[in-house]
Image (cartoon, rainbow over all chains, first blue to last red; front, side, top):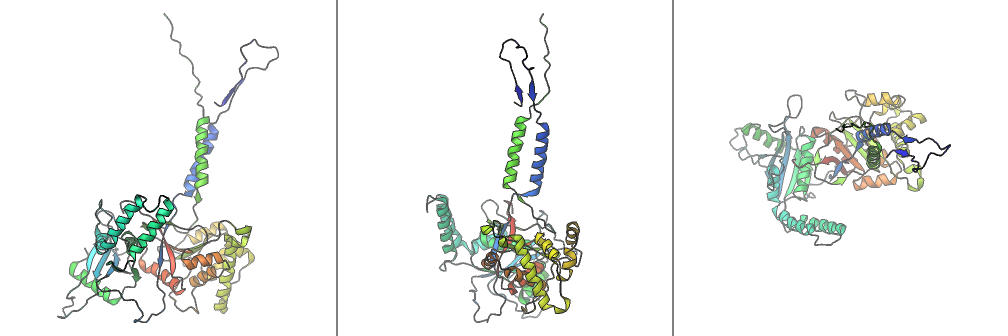
Length: 249
Length: 239
């Protein structure tokens, strides 16, 4: 391929004709150089662009208590994120090698009455869960809890998703997508369905991963109403009581 | 009896086809690649299912190291509008540093920061910055190699933009001065993007305690920059 052959067409050698020469170009150094360049580009590039998760925080300005939107008690669910760390502040890992990000949660209003004054709360509603991915089609961990709370919305969205897959809204892909998105948003914000209001709180030592994980669960479970709040004295009292009664694990 | 003649074969391998393949691969990598930006610390962002991509232009990204040090990087318009350089990244960085330093000098008349034109030029070439104002001149007059060494040293107390708890907007802290300067740099595109929540991205390591990131978010909230994006990686199947 890389040689140019000059063949004389069968005849006798003419006098003064040039000597038959095979020009052979060796491409090996060229390949070497290309490989080096490829290696350079492979090492210096990012193929995957970072994803982003958009959030909007409320303003810092003081809002009157009466102006605050109150969530219905039956709809509220509070998540308190915590991460287990050792004495040096390194995150401890569970037996399966996953970081020990723990979600404590309670439904409705907190209750810290202690009538018999024994230092223990009478009815601590706090429960403990972890972040776990799906096992096949079944939800596990905190995802199952949130999934069950938002069942009505998720069932409707599942129907919608099937229609979207079959391209029922429009044969055009982009149009199909945008109609699906609009309809899904409508369902997420449908006030006739029972939808939870999730309040996410994080302890100071909770890892950033766990907070993103919690925000992610909101996306996965199609929860439209959630907020990030600061942990308060009531929450820490419940948390301490839970750990005192049940131990850390 | 016929003798079996062993033909002497040449061991030359034709490399032309190989060369063709490598050139094709090279072209592919050159066309698809975006270069890694230099950052003082490598952070592993947490993963999420979100599929929105981070914008490449008109973005102020805030990097929070696991120790709580804060760095900012600014990118302007990727393609210049009407070839007007004032929309480009470097011109924007120049106007940002001028704005930020004059604001700092107004608030701290006793410890004024003087920058030379050369300092401002150096600053416009740096992707990610993060030193206190008082150290800015000394830092910018160093060579690039020294700058990289200094800014990569997380135990150095003079690395990272000072960010203390502050809700009083008449006396903003250094981080707040920078963020305001970015918004007021005269580049409307980035100001609009910041308003919409696309222009600010917060990048933090997955193991960073919430306390540290919350502190940065709190500062942004005080600046009324309530909408922003959090950088995450793509979630894998087993998460």
